[in-house]
Each structure stands twice: as C-alpha cells, then as structure tokens.
Image (cartoon, rainbow, N blue to C red):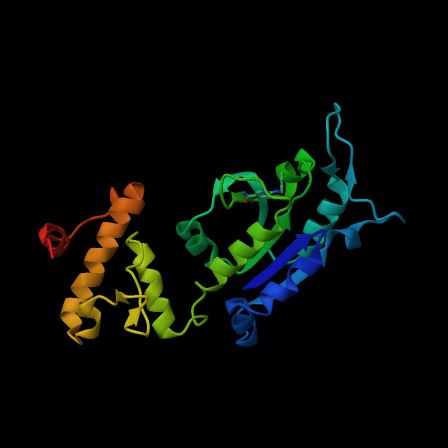
Length: 240
Ligand code: 4G3
C-alpha cells in the first residue's frame, strides 16, 4: 500500500514513523510512505500557500492552486487512488473505516490547516473526508498519523500472528479485559487469583466476563450492539 501525505509540516512525521509499527511495515516492504511539503507545489517566489477568505472574516484559507497541483501530481497515472481530506467536517473515523481503507492500494492524505481550504478543492479532487473525533486540532497531521497507523496494522503480514489475534476483540466490539504482569503483589494489590491458577478455561471465562462488565459500564453504546452468547449470559449471572 502506498501512502502519500500532503502537509505544511513535513517534519512532524519522521519521528513517529520511525518508532511505530509503520516502520516495521515499511521494512517488510508492505507499505511505502511518502511525505510531501505543500510549499513545494507553489510556483511563486514567496511559496505562498494561503490567503484571506472571500467575504472577509478571521484567519487564512489554503489556496486551491498548490493543493490542486499536489493532489493531481501525486495521483496521476494510477487510477485506484483514494484522496482523503482530514478535517473536523469529515465522517467519524472508526475501526470499520480503517478496515475499509486497508483494502485500498493507494491512499492520498491531505492535511488541512488554518480555517480550512478552498471549497473547490473538496469539490474537485477529494474523494472522502474523515474526522478522527469531534474536536479541533491545529492541523490534519495528527489525524493523518492516526489513520496511517490504524490502517497499516490491518494490512496482512504487518502484525505477527499473536498480535493480529488481538484485533478480533474489537470486531465483536468488546473492550479489553484487565491485564497484569509481575510482581504478583504491588502496593498490597493482588493479581486476581484465577490468573495465577494456570487453569486456562477458567482464565478464558474470567476474561470474557471482565470484558462484558467493562463494556457495559464504560461503553453502554457498544454493549447494546453486542450479540451475547448463552455463555455470556451465564457469565454475567454468576456473582463470583
Ligand atoms: C479546518 C482534523 C481545520 C478545516 C483537522 C482542517 C481536527 C480534525 C483543519 C480543515 C483539524 C479531526 C485542521 N482538526 N477531528 N484541523 O480529525 O480542513
């Protein structure tokens, strides 16, 4: 999968990319990530990328020309490219959308800034608009990294088989069960006895029950959607 990212702040990316799962995916040749400075797509000597909004008002608007030049240049001669704008007006990002995007071959991520960009860019060269949540950020760079990370780890072969099993916990929309590691007693707090019992079936049931309880308490919206098995119902009845 090819990722092209268009940004005004290219320096924000390498540090993250060279630490994360994305680095491993790149080394395995499963993804290729290219970061592009929007300013490199200007033609004037001041490398101007923004201008005052028509109709007045505060802030600056990203100009259509450099963005258009960047997007068309990076999507020329390969048809299956998905051109995504990261903005607070987009559809809300989710694991489901990450799965959908992981099936693409070429994603072009456009990081907006300031008070937005010339609407004609959205209207002409953007295929999809995504928001990572209902809050405002200075720019689309952090959302682009979130999309890059979550999509990359879904590409077959990126995670080891151990790690990829973990993804399935989100598939049926249950939150994780509590995890513990050594020591067995920390500040007087004991690790639940069942986890040190070595009884695999009891451990599996305990974890499933904890996931169900956690989800019902912390995310009633998710809990409501779960298709509970007979075993789940039994686990929740059991008071131990
Ligand atoms: C306005 C994305 C602001 C328009 C971007 C881009 C939050 C998100 C910006 C625009 C952003 C998000 C940059 N803030 N919630 N700021 O995903 O196109």
